[in-house]
Image (cartoon, rainbow, N blue to C red; front, side, top):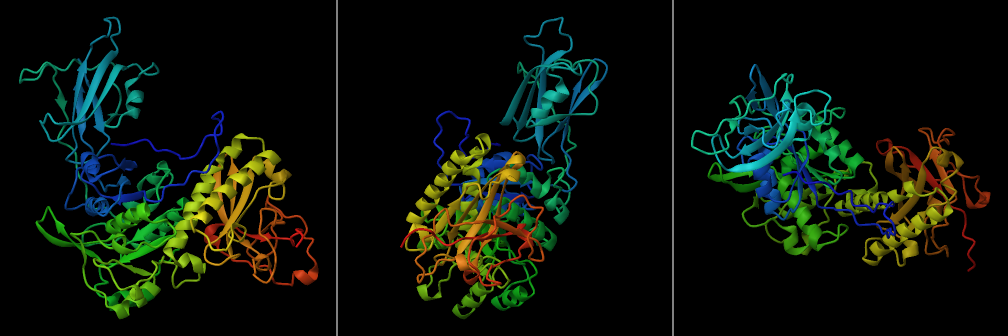
Length: 593
């Protein structure tokens, strides 16, 4: 059953609201694939495999999605968002007769296992309202069954276009049916009592539903414009992990799907769980395949090898892609360990009933990890062979810290929390009091994480910073209705910041990485405290490294002496896949020694 999504940020319009940044969720997994039944191209929130079975029909041999979701919950997952995609599937229809025609309803869910029935009555409708009728629609377990899985009641519907409760408009809110074709000029006739003597009779759906064929990469990718496939997840604000199981038991997800999914995860600050190709049937094959693997992303992680689990439908053990298992294990670990810490002990191993398809030797273990392939294990290993999980940025020219899964997930968590927790600024006056409050709010949030050991540094001042003042909120920015806030934190070394610029505007919010000058980094030999006033401003760079005069975020001229800013000392990282690169420039501190 679909559940409403919570945006998880405090609305500034609430009187007396305490603007404390809430910590964003980190363990919500999204799955995209083929299912037995249920709504198509619509994100549905489920909290157990029983919920999934009720909406999408449970295990189905052609559906690798159903097995992945089951393994996700069996391995500790608590919350999943499901998007069902189809290839040529058709929903069943319902035919409601009128005196001279018929009203045809089409199911929302496609497939031959989508069983609907409907009933029409005129209870409570006055005789003069000859265009009005009541409609009851139910989804039942099987054809002719009395086991009701879902029900909707629509009172006082009308067949007259333009009036309140016009049937074609009212059913747009239905979870079960829509109007197909034109609406007749006469209302449907009352449904006669059932033949078994029941007072209320029902008209069953026609046996014209079709499951369609095996899905392809095109079906999974979908359309951003129409919100289908992967892009249906735009309607789900909270996703942290994305799993795309194999298209069939024999067909892996194509590279085109991985590329689109990787970009989608980057935009949504989520982590893509990538299944290893089915041809990687040994450590040597995996290492050789990874050398030529074209997909690299700091927002993706691969887990290896495939897993062996009991297939309840086939009655024997089968090989399965590990994305659901890995996502469940990550979600389970998040309940016992902070997102920035690698899980240890029993939290880092598979649940009983699952085992790796083949063993990996200790000599191959470190080689696979360094190549960016994380290993699933059924038993604990010696500490000397343990290694921190990696992202698929390993082996590429990526930010070194983002090669580690825990560090990258920390960054995604902080970016999401800060962006959502400061959206209230749009509803306040874009002036110094608002900036001061937002800066204090972000500093308090980062300080709480520092106290828990999330950042590197001996003190909070050496571990994070936040800036929100007139230097990054100039007249041009305010004229456009935008408000900017910059923050950063040290993921591995004190003073080596990963910095980000949050921009809130009426059209939406955006967070992008920015770069801190090398000379601004903290050094133990320099008594320079890092606080929110350390930044001089922001200078956006174009592809050639020159300042872009057309950008609305600018920096005032630097006051640093030439001897303190040697030529070429500004550090710039061109990362076009993350948007514009911005240099943060800092003048020397005026605090007395």
